[in-house]
Amino acid sequence: MIESITLIKPLESNAVVFDNQLYKTVIDLSEINLLDCNSFDIKIVFSEAIVQFRSHDYIWKKLKTSFIANEFSPKIIKLQNDQIVQANITSGIWEINQNNPTVLLWRFNPELSSPITNYVGNDNRRNLSQAKQKFNFVESPKLLFPKNEAIELSRSKCPFVAIACFTDHCDFDTPENLVIQRHFFKEHQIKITKGFFLNHFSKREENASFQNQNEELLKWHNDGHELCYHSLSQSIKSNAESFEDFRQFIPPLDNIKVWIDHGYQPYNFSLFKNNNIAEEDFSIILKQKKIKILWNYIDSGTATNGVINQFNTEQFTLSGFLRGNKDLSLIKKTQLIIKNIIFHYYNDEKLILRYKNVATCFKKVFFQRNVKLFFPLIKDFFKLYISIFPVFLCWKTNKNTPYKLAKYSPILFKHNISDSEFYIFQTLEMLDFKKTLSQENINALINEKGVFIAHTYFSVPFEYHSGKLFSSLTMIDKKVSENFKFLGTKIKNKEIWNPTLTELIDYWSRFEKVILDIDSEGNLFEKRNSDLIFRKIT
Image (cartoon, rainbow, N blue to C red; front, side):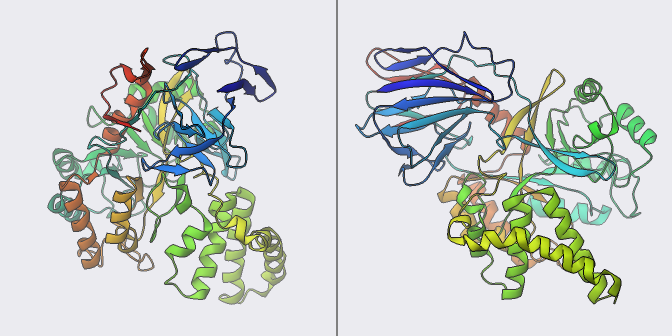
């Protein structure tokens, strides 16, 4: 059933020797040097067309659209002759173009599948790079051809249900609202990964910190929440003082594994290279502090009506965003769709900076009457228009194209800093809890067995933030409370698993251990116990 297998590296491609056995095909990579590249593809050409695939929501679907399965989605397909094909390991990404249905690409670290944010130069300009990865397979890649049944693995500890994980940025936490938040989440039995500032060094005197509110934050820990670093302070000290803080700080608990970048702190994961900190030194400090999990300013998109599942790339499109905001006025929708084209569809730093310049100049010209900026405004606006217009010109095609950083659903991946591996996680920006956590959205997440790792600001006080948790400085919004109550009920009924971030990653790390094999009768089995939940499907 396999006609050829080719290994494709950035600058070369080679035919790969493969061993066709009765119910499996072994792909031999032993003679190929993979140390000289950071990504490669295995191109597999079948004699039969691929007609179905097992989707991210554990449903058989016809190959009418392109198919992508990352490490946490089933790598299971069905050929035209009804033969099931499955990978023996979870590593890599399977990708199939519906216009070329005999070709399966088994991809390892392709572009934008594991994106890293770096801030470079004197102006801290955002730049994206690809994670550095090592290709250490638990077993040589194989294709398995079971006689009747495939095996699919559950992403959730509660078998094959949705996952809701919250990571909260503490920028606006105060001693008072910390207590209110904790009581609120305890009432609804919802766990979160709660960011905190270790040091009370802030432009806002009322900001909470572990230095001043350690008793309250330890109550969060005792309630089952996970505490995580949101850098070390709200405000920025001099570089010398900042680096000294980073090197010398003492973890307040033994099990704080997560670091969430905040602002332009020079020791941030996204900034340390810009400040000439050696990778080895940075890696050693993280390991000394027992930090293993990092976030650095990448969201797959913004949650809204119908946009909640990070594994469903159809939601992270311009069309999906418009559907989720159809209740807004035409002017507001136009403004937001332009912003989404620039920030998510293109995700290009030059365009983002031009958009910000246009916005700033517009305010100065029309609100501050600074007429000198009128012509620069027109010039930048015209350049922006030239970039945006082609998207609308080919709207029928472009509206359904997944955002660049959502295409492969890179929610979690590994990255090497010096010689040490760290987990990097990607989030879903979640600001409007009225829309995002509506009953319709929660039910849709449940039906799709979906996943989100939310990037939230639970204590944000600004009036222009619609759907925020607090309706006033001390009051939880009634509608938002109802939504969390509904979510809490679904969690209690085990229709949704609600882990902390580290709990989720500890479970998902077991995917790396999976090895499937097939016996002489064509029956699949787990060769090594991964402690994952699985089931057989036909």
